[in-house]
Image (tube, rainbow, N blue to C red; front, side, top):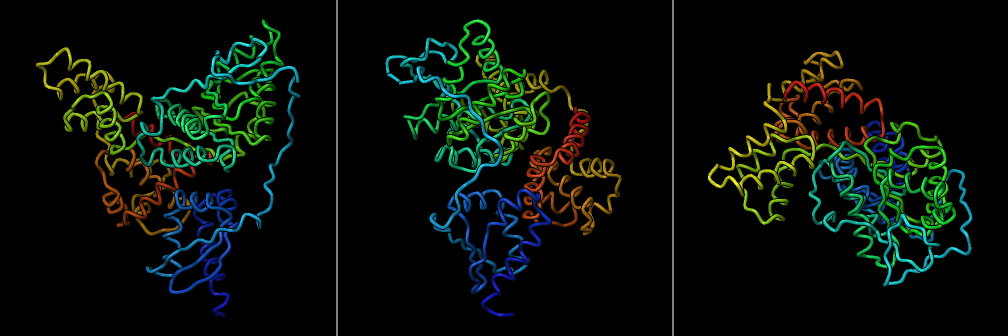
Length: 474
């Protein structure tokens, strides 16, 4: 092999492997732009378009890169980055038709420190300062990080450093109730205001946007003011966007979206479902939601639940025994919201029933929340449920088969074992599913999370099996 081209051959071999692991769109977006530069002493140097591109690669695909390089180069494989100079990068192009309603030249927003009205009052919009409506409690410092939300936090922190200037615009955060969507979205807004105090940030729910749009049109006859108001924003954070229904409301939002996005402003949305699952939405809006990278928040694992309880108890200034916190984390698994509710309820009861042991109080409180468990979820039950769902044998699941269906079933079993079984280490999960190491299990969990955020059918596989396991364990 020509030593001058060896780095190219090595990277091409890596790409062939990576292409079989990640989704096609992820591969096109994050791996095709990479160019191999050199290879020396087991170190492959690659060129990437920007520092952010490198940071995202390392946060989202570190395990994929590590395992692939070791497979192609060997155990001593190392990776170095070279950032492409900005002047050599092509100008960014945004696909899709853009359209915006013209802003009424008589309507202006000139912030003054003496006024901070509600964003749902339209007094001609002269010389007002927008209240961002952000709750300071929902900051990054109070957001407990775990595998369930690590991707979201990483993306959010990058947006806060350069709002409107990252690939995550719009940012679409989705997940079930109580998983921290509102907290993460508001944390982004708070961090932006701290770093860029002059930026105009607004948090609003989809329902509030819809009702105030209707009020502006039917009562105040102030649609122009309504549109102009939102077009003055630097950052729009819309929570529960699934409630944004009605053709007139969606048309107004469509024009606001286009205007802000075209102007380089930051858009952050949350929903209880992925963009592909939204109902009664115009296709032109759904396509725009997919311009950025959807980020899914998942149910927290035991370690994350326990860390959240510790942090919240500390914020409340209450000393709760570790065994009590561990008991709560083991019993309340579905969401952060229920977990916090259980802790606050425990603290309230403990302040009244001082003579009753805290662990006894915790058992009583969680009994009302989750009921008595019928069957404990363990690795064996997870594996059997996966095998039953995909109609494969346990021998196939534990084998070294590389058939796509078997590989996906094996990865789903690892993912569910990690998220549904308390105090179960990666090493234990790997040992019980064919003697895999902890790095393989971690990679499997990351792959499943990525596929769930991009593949509607795959996400149904995982949620179906999880629902069966959870419902039979309560």
